[in-house]
Image (cartoon, chains in turn brown, cyan):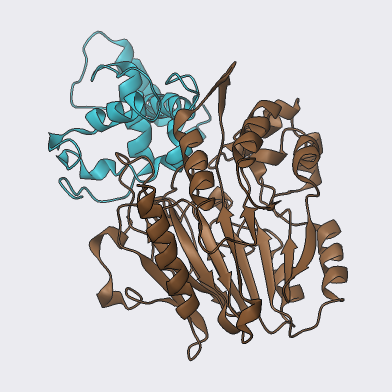
Length: 358
Length: 136
């Protein structure tokens, strides 16, 4: 905790000196262990949705979100060991969008690890993305933590290969979040086999951090806040003492605890999404644990984006959110109840009107 | 249109009635109700088309990008005091704000058929929710 608060103060000081706002659409993630020499941080930027108009024109609003995240991430003190990008760099997966996004990201002074999003994938099934950013799924070890990146936004082969007259049409169909012609996300058998093999080489006491684009839990199928084979992935992760899943896609704060696995979402740099319960026709399962982010004010185009310090003290995940034009939020892993809880708003009677979504 | 035999027989005299020049203002049939619902749903479908169209504004951004299934639009709360505009407004004024800003496009007239279609779609997605005019 001390480390977290110190780093936050130093950062805000730096940011203040640079005359920036107090809110960043990024996530600073700090992993704290018994041996403080091993503590490290990483930043998390996600869901930029860089959108090509024509020629050299791109949607200004979304550009600004990513440019700001990159600029502010470069100011982080202490410096993060690396940065994750959580997927959906592009809107329609074109070279123009991926190139433009990659150019903005190239201003980062850190190593970046990328996660595949559906907006990056469904035009060419990740071919160009791979040329720019590398493998679609992989793992690595860093200072005692085992990181696993999955491409969780694949779907049934029949939908991917047989349904659409062109790759462009396939991309458009999956790009519409609420499109009834879409298809549920899944990790798939190939990656599940790889994951099983990868995990067989990891000690059960090693903290594991899994990065995916979709939630690896089932929240609302209609908007793919959903991973079809979530239970199978969870079962593979069950034998390990400390597991954290960090995901993008949902453009909102969500957190949950399922057995030994803590789930946390990160914010988008592009725009926020409604909570599923605000769609009156939806059958949805937002984790009861989640106290929602404040309702977004569209007149502040960067509202409902934010940044988080995440501290996995002893392998458990604590999040410290700073939200645009809103009071900071902290979601702390409670070692007694064994679940993440909001430090101020968790009890029903502590919540404030903007957290009520309808 | 498929009708069960009995129903078709019942409807037949009514259909003949309609063929006559004297209209009965306060009488309508199941067939009328079905037709009116079809008319409404046709406009809802036009609205859904506009809602998901990259052509509505000038930058390719569609309403549905931020409002999947028209969520977070709250048609049941209008007219209401729109805090960002500083006055009580009907829903179409807020729709025009979105057309001008995130979509970088032109506003629509209040009685533009496109505006009607958008509002029909948004309201349809919100069906079943009780009216709460003025609620923020």
